[in-house]
Length: 158
Length: 111
Image (cartoon, rainbow over all chains, first blue to last red; front, side, top):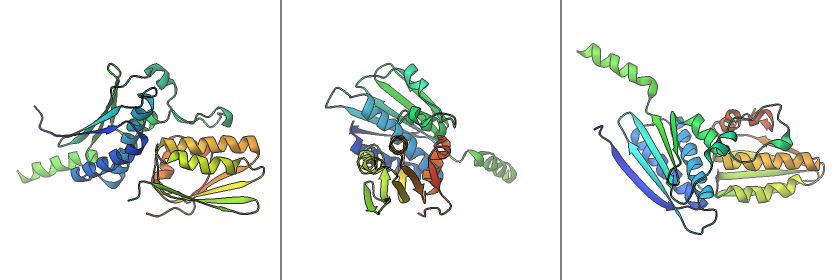
C-alpha cells in the first residue's frame, strides 16, 4: 500500500471556521512544498468545499460538523471534505456550474453556485460522493512539471 | 495574516470609496454585502471598491459583487473594482465575471 500521512480535523459546520480550515490547508500545503500559487489554489478550493458543507448540509439544524481529511502523499495532496448532515441534489448543482457568458443579462446572473466550478478549475481531480451526506474528494499533484526532470537527473547519475 | 475583513467607506458628493482589508469568505462576505448594497441604491452614485489589501477571496465574494452589480442596474448607479491583487483578479477571470463587472487593474494591488 502506498505510504502516506493522514491529518483529520473536525470543525462545527459554521462559516467562521472556514478560515480556520483555510489556514490549516495553507500550513499542510506549505509543509509539502507546494508553490505559493498552488497553495492559494488549494485554499480557495478547500474553502469552497467547506462553505458548501457548512451552508447546504445543516440548513434546518443548529448543530453539525464538517470533517476535513488530508492525505499527504509523496506526489500529491488528497483532501476530503465531508458532512453527514444531509445531501444536496447533485444534478441541480451541476446545472449551476460553469463560467459566466458575456451575453448573459445582468438580471439573470446568479450570485451563488460557483463553488464547485472553482474547485474543478483549481484542483487536478475532483470526485463527489452523495451517499451519506456529501463527500468532496479533491486531489492536487505536487510539482507536476518537474517529475520528468527529476527522472532525467536520476538516469544520468547511473 | 488577517482572516477577518475590515470595510472602510468614504462618502463623497456623488461617489463612495470603499476600502477593504483582509479576507472575503463565507464568514466575512455578509459584512461586505451589508456595507456595499445600500451604497449601490443611491441613484447616479459611483461606488468604487479598492481591493488592494484583500489577500484572499472566494466565490462568496464573487456573489456579493454580482449582487451589488445587479443593484446598480436597478438603481442607475455604477460599480467599479480597482487595484485587485493577481490572485483575486484571477477568480474574476476564471468565472468570466471580468467581462461583466468594471475592473480597473492597471494599478495592481501588492502583497
